[in-house]
Image 1 (tube, rainbow, N blue to C red):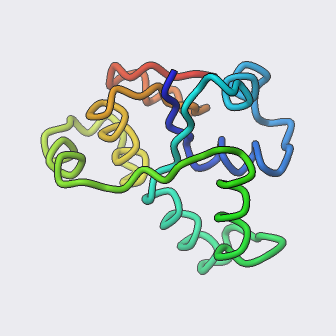
Image 2: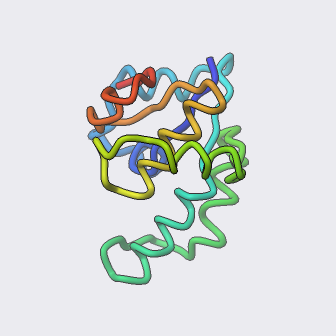
Length: 128
């Protein structure tokens, strides 16, 4: 499977947070699965840290690259095709970061690891 990790799923995974479901954790830990993390999610984390809504034990620039490498997660860049897909999506979900993940999942045929059930309204396969 090719997995796109939602921002919270990635953070909960690397922090060992019990809020991550056992099904989601198993999918991320499965070495047979390709794991991707959106460039948009890095931007989301940076914004939340800057606003004081998220606190990290160390800098984003240190933690994220190390955890991506440690866990075999690749960065999924944002493409014109992703942006184009967003422009035609219905507004079931209004969060711009989640809309990006949905568009990326649709365009790249990815399964999304996310707690957010609103992803289901877009026909993407969500693992939780």
